[in-house]
Length: 193
Image (cartoon, rainbow, N blue to C red; front, side, top):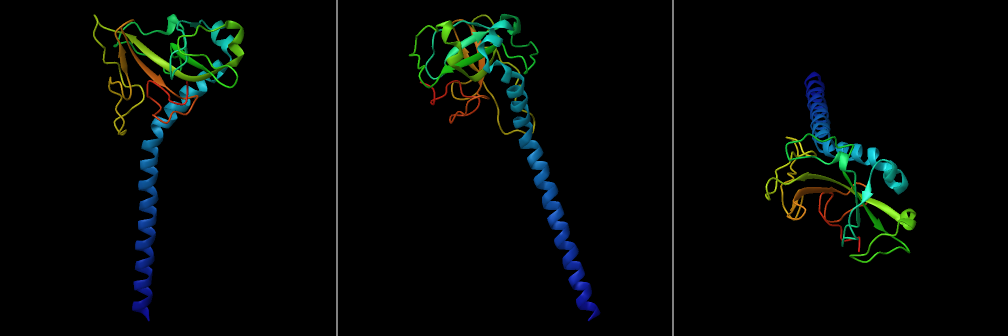
């Protein structure tokens, strides 16, 4: 009887150890995968105020592009633009906000925005950009990845930083205000016309 109680006690302790170890391991993995989500939430919260285009304009953002397919209108604050790929950037102050039309307001690619329709624009993404180096793409810092992340934001057309030869910038879209089936860092969003 005593041997049976001791075996049961050992099995219970081993089982409890496995459960606790599993919880600790899962918690550790979750903390790593949550790091990126926390950074994205930080950007989302810091830029939520700019769902109001009038506030974005009062903070120095101005529309600089016609309607770009699968992106929208780009509003730039030149004071927040990084001078080169080595510059440190505050992720809570992106230099570019990307708005799109939804509902009744459906701009076509190339359309200019009518400022009287600001209230019909929806904030979809923020964008970080660096001036290129002598016609070559820079290699900006990876703001949104860490040593534990499997995601690498390389300069590529598919995912992450992409280079535009004119106006010679390396840019990163971050779709924190509109879901993007192609990925949060994809340059374009197929859910936007």
